[in-house]
Amino acid sequence: MNIYKLEDIKELTASGSVVTVGMFDGVHVGHRHILSLLGRVAAEKGLRPVVVTFDRHPRQVLTEGVATHFRITTNEERSRLLSQCGVDTVVELPFTPQLAGMSACEFFEQVLVGQMNARALVLGFDNMFGSRGRNDFDRLPALAEEKGVSIHVDKAVFYHGSEVSSTRIRKALEHGQTDRAASMLGRGYVMWGTVEKGRQLGRLLGFPTANVSLADTSKVWPADGVYAVWVTLSDGTAGLKGMANFGAQPTFGLDKPVFEVNIFDFEGDLYDSVLTVEFGPRLRDICRFESVPVLVEQLNADRAAARKLLSRSKGGNKK
Image (cartoon, rainbow, N blue to C red; front, top):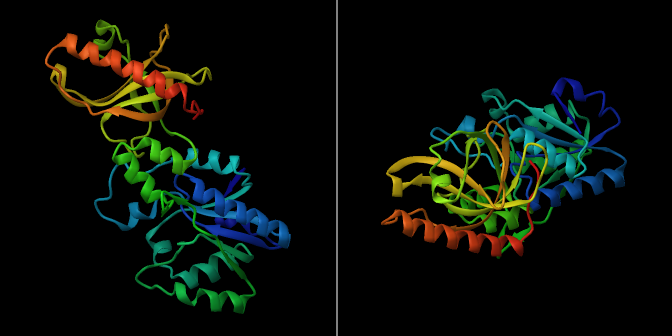
């Protein structure tokens, strides 16, 4: 897959393109449905399929006080996932205040038609673009007809009676509902980082853990808790089962959140290596135990529960 700047795309689309526009954060099952429609329309019309997206989420530019941990996928992850969906051409636009100020019809006429020679436009069921303050999206069908551009609106994809969306996935993760998020994503939610030396409390308890320093703190943080996880090592070894503590360690009086991963049946030095951690189901809340033996008893129960859950679930995807 190739990622292009706006000034580099005009020659590639000289014979016409079919475009879809969106952030595609998460590249979830609804997005993949849109991409499938994009491919079909392109094949039927003999046009180049193009995904138009942005270098940052519009809410990061337009909304004050937006959550720090907001993205489901980084740009790198999004590119990889789009490529896996068969997307060959992506235009990544810098989302600037100037771009945000363009109305839908201006963006359509100047960018999609003027720069990409769009002959067809694929929209999601709730897809909109353009300035909300200068909202003329309802005029788009008439303008498209005038320009000879066909519009194709995709159907919604549902999960438990509601449309799949990036917003629903974020909320599921923030509530620790990683299994729900995985169903809407079509895969487990992934975070990764470098293993650093911690206080080695887990080793003393018989549960050695890798203390993971997150590589990208812009991603959504799942709710604090203990999770069943799959782990991929730096050398590509994937599908290792384990459990993770995401949050504080109140039994030891530590309020600072940590991300600690215990890989089952693993021996070896992981310091300075990168771990990719895919979240399975949430096992429980983080809580303070009255003594270390009671904590160890609970950790044994957590491990047994995680093994059982992971043995009947699919996972272990690479970053």
